Amino acid sequence: MAAEGGGLPEEGLSLWLTDWKVDRRVPWLGRHVVAVIGGRAVGQIDYFLHPDGQALEVNMLRVHPDFQRQGLAGVMMDALYAAHPTAWVNHGWRTKEGSAWWNQYREPTPQRNVHNRPPAEWAAYFNAVDVAADMARNAHQNRIYNLDGRRENVYRYGERLETEAALHTSSFQPVTPVRVNPGAQPLHGPAQLVLPPAVHDFVHDRAQDPRKQATALLEFVGHGNLPHDAYWNATPQAAFAELHHEALFAGEPPEQPVTHVVFTLAPLDRPALLVASALAESVDFDQFGDIAVEVTQLSWRQADRPYQTHSAEFTPAVPAAIAPLSARQASRAYRHRYDEGGFLRAGAREPARQPFADRAGQIQAMAERLLSSQASRARAPLPQPAAPPAAVPRLPLPERQPPPPGRRM
Image (tube, rainbow, N blue to C red; front, top):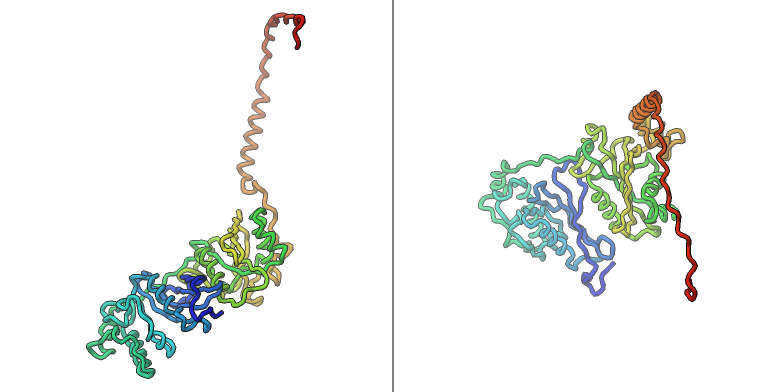
């Protein structure tokens, strides 16, 4: 994966800002900056973003060994600053390698780094004592490894570090976590599939009926096999992004074509049970057994062709289930409807829906009105036929004369 010439390639490098699923106990939003070269992730910054977008904390910066010491970390960090141009930035504490990198990195706007400003300015976002501890740890690392550490920018406390920091701890404003409500909105779950050639060709043929393609995909997966170990997202775009992020870090591309599928569910009828597993922008069902759901839509595309997305709606919604973590966790209702593989049992298949099944009352009322109208017409006297009109004399047609001599027809 090493770039020729000992530097980053001039073309083919892209940066992607995407979602990061963080622990539900973390009230801030998770985000990634991912560096991509040649269709593979070669670097990443993980960070937390305050819900109001005005503060962020870097959690980890890493670069693939083949691309280290080529400026990629600085490119990603510059992009992070550019993505949040007015936010306070907290870099936390650094490892030995991180301290060496920071020693040569030039911040675009060092005045937004909380280590370079007094706590009175940013203490509402970060615990001042924690920041002071990180600063002390970084200073210790710099002394050990004889590094400058950009010390000209670091804020100089007038008092002892911990004393001044303690003055501002009361300014810190904890964040109330934001949670997705699975009972009030659709959820979108991702799945990565390697389909048999015949199924793959059928579901990606744009000349086919999308509803039949979606039905074939659902039959292949199994109605009881909707993914339990995936995050169910608030938007289909986030579900597709999760699949793309996984593919970027998958190493060598698979030999067979991969299909990315997103299942869309109707709002669930047990939100109180599931709210404990909800994150800010997704829901994690991993700790639950099977969950009965209704699939309202399927979207799918080839992993290497994200610009060609197929989609089909199910009207009415199709009953299905998020698979249990193991067969032992399956409920009685699940075992009655699905076999050990998560496929519909023969007796559990939905009967063919009649097009007017839900309009029986309307049809009966219309039939009664028609019969009543027919009966009233039968009782009414028949109208007398009118006298035939007088014959109208016709003028005789003129006889056709032969053409004069010398004239042709």
